[in-house]
Length: 97
Image (tube, rainbow, N blue to C red):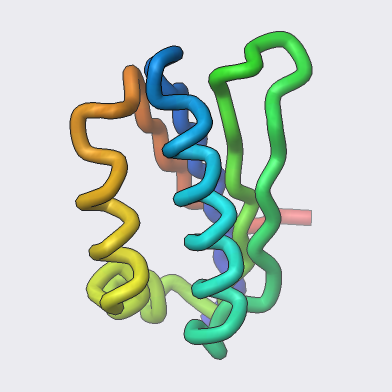
């Protein structure tokens, strides 16, 4: 089974930007520590929209994603941003060439 790349983009409500940003940093750090199947987990800030952030993730394969979403650090993150974001989009990608 091949590696999977995830692109998760989060648009944060203006009044929660500092709070959610700190949670994004915490999720980044916790994932790099706790998810051994995660090869790459990087956080980016959109240059045209200061309230928009994107994670680019590379995982060993698609089988690891469901279990990573059930880990305590991810569930804590999800609860902490509830009602504080405008939009969330997640795309799972497989490299072709």
